[in-house]
Each structure stands twice: as C-alpha cells, then as structure tokens.
Image 1: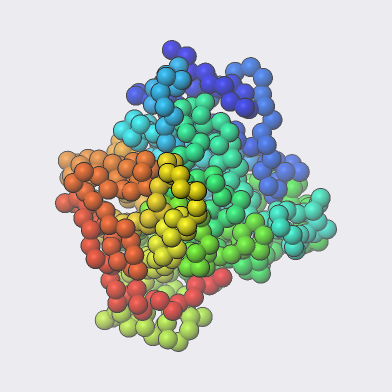
Image 2: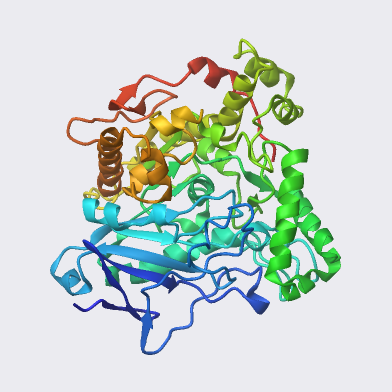
Length: 539
C-alpha cells in the first residue's frame, strides 16, 4: 500500500498504524538555529525526493531531570533545537483520500509548564481518536523554556519597542516565539492538510495545561484569525500570560545566569542549548519560590503580536468567535503538592504569599470560603482555583457572552453558513478518579483525563490509571468522553445521543463527568465564583 503524500514542502513517506495511517516528524518551519534562534519561525525549505516520515522528529530542548527523562528515555526522540515538527494520523491510506470527502482536523498542543513536553508522548498517540471519529489528528511541537518563552525582544541593538508586527530588528529577538510556532504550524496545515485527507476549513485546536493555555492565547491572537474554527482547552492556566516588564525581568535573569549583558544579547545565539536549559531551570525554580502562583515563562502581551491579555480579551469580546469547549478536573493541584520546584501554591505559606498582592476585599472573600483557611486541604483547593478553575470560568463566561453573538452578527449575506458552527461555549468538570488515584490521594488530578480523550489506555498514564481498575468503567467513560470531543470537532456541540450538553451562560450549565458518566449540573460552587470575582492575577 502506498503511504506517500505530496505536500507543498515535498513528498512524505508514512506508514500504517493499525486502522489509520501516520506520518511523523514533519517539519513545518525551518530549523530555528543559529541566526534564527529567538526569531519568528521561517518557512521550511522544500526538499527533493521522498522524505521518511515514519519516525518522530526531534523534541524541544528541556530539563530531563525535571521530567525524569520520560520524554527521551527508551529510545524516544532526541532533544534538538530543530524541533519544529508535527505528526499526522489519518483514517485509511492516502490512496483513499481522493475518493472520500475531506475530514475534520484536530490539532493538539502538549502541556508541560512551557518548559517540558513533546508531541510524541505515547499518551498523545492519535490513532484511536482518528479512527473512532473519522478525523485527521495532528500533534505539534513548539519551542520551550527560554528558547520559546524568553522575551529578549527589548534588549540589544535590534530591540523592538513598537510596531504592528512585534518583530525585532536585524540583531534582535522576536517576542512570543512559541506562540508564533503554533501559528506557523496552523499555517502549514492550512496549505497541506488536504494531502492527508483533512479539510483546511474544518480545523479545531486542542491542548491540555500549558498546551491549553496556548489554545486560549491563540483565541486572542490576531495572526491566528481564520486558522481554526473551534477550540478545546483542558485545564488551561489562562492567566500565565504576562506583561513586557515582568517578562523582560525573567529574560534578564536568564542572561545573568549565562553571564551575558543585555546590550550583548546577540551572544545568546552562541551559547550551547544545554546551558540555556540549565539557566531556564534555575530561573524556573527561583520564580516558583519567590513568586508563587506564577510561571517563569509564559506568553507576553507585547502590544503587537499579542495586543491584549487573553483573559481581558475573553471578557471584552475580543477573542475569535468560534465554538469553545473548556474545563478543569476536580483535584488539579494534587499532582503538584510534592513538586520541586513548587509550580503551584499548594502549601499554606505559598498560598498566603500568592495572595500578598491581592486587594484586601478579594483576599478576605477568598479565604472566607474555607472553614479552615490555614489547612493543607484549603491550600490545595486554593491552588486549583487560583491556577485553573476560576480563570477558566472567567474565560468561559466572557466567551459565552460575546462569541455566539459575534458569530451570528458576522454577516453571511443571507447565505447558509455550512462550515462554521454557532459559537457556543461549553464547560465540563472532570470528576472521575480511578482506584489507584484515590489510593494515592490524588483524586481526579491534573491531566488524568488525557488517556481517556485519546483512547490511549495502554499508554504510560493510561496503564497507571487502570492498574487497580475499575477497567470497565474507565473504558466506558473513555468512549463517552471521546464521543463528546469528536461531536464537538464535527459540529461545535459535544452533545451525543443520550448525552445532551447545555451551552454555558453566566456561570451556569456545566457538564460533569463521574464514574456514572456525564450529566449537566447548574453551576460549580457559586459562592467561590463570587468570592474570586474581583481578583486580578499577577501580570
């Protein structure tokens, strides 16, 4: 069977992956090395002949100690700055593409606190989701740590302090490099995904954790307009986007670690990646101690490429008016309670420090929702609400209030809109915990829904979840979650026969997943939502 496809960049050889075909390690941009380090991604140079796409490409440089080597062990992909590649799973073989309508496309951005992760992680294998939903599934890399999220654009001779593009001068660095990577991947897919059987007018984006924050930021990025028609954000830390001053301060710390003056920032292009990764880890750890509740590395509101904080864009109706599915897990923060460095404010001391700069009213109201505010249980719940749940509810409420109206007001001249579903917002709450999660005191923790979404119950996370069962419940719930996500990708509504979802509106209507399946509830802890309503997160 022929697994060769023709793209604008060149021909690619894939292979069979059970019920689907797969192409791995496809470059969507030029290697961001040498003079391109710290610059916006550039178009990939077309290749001659047939490129082997049967193996995953390089992954972004990252700290193996932080990830316990999970990204690169057991013969997995190596780390290299030449990491801007993606993977495609498509039902059937390329020879069947011409005889069938083009399929919807789902593009996944991985998590990892903006410093770790990869599109090639086994739990993100797209075969099951592709086959079950008759979808084309894509997973994409982006640059990490200081190489992807360090904002060096205000330093050196080529510094850019104004302008519509946010691009640096000849000797400078660009802002929001990782965000531009994601846009570049979507632009490449718009041109080439039809070769794999995907419909470029029916692309949806999806991510979890930092990857979900990439999704919520893309919703506020003007350059991403028209590149996708819907978005799924699983547990996004929406607020981990920062202003120029704060981002420049962290970038200055990176340079200090490397012994480079800001006026000599161009020297950063000569530093080995291993030293930059080491410097990133040092800044990450220091930030976690000194500024709990924030990340050292995040997208930056630069006034040009990202003109507005995503949370402000959601609340003011300036996000792209597309269908939106967003949610959190019951016990997000338990995964981080023993993390070193402490990425979330999961202890009482870190909780109180995170609240130091909050206004008095917000601090009083938030702590007032806990009978014992100085208990470890309160701190864990606080970390979940601070990092995930309350920003998610704010974003969902803003999008629900504005996007549906904006979509209907967009104007189609009386013609039926066939490819753009109504821009409803749907909110879920994932509350299922397997026996091993309960035994370990994790509950429905951060990321535990991923293998159920992808159907990768035999992957590393999936195996852990199922080690004590209940396996039948896990398989049934996985099928229900997958079918909801697939329905959303296809029609902009996650409802399926027997499992209707009500659109979210003014903090109400949340679809809750438990061991018994999914069902709508009126709202989530309204007293907490009200207590958090005046808080402004650090920027």
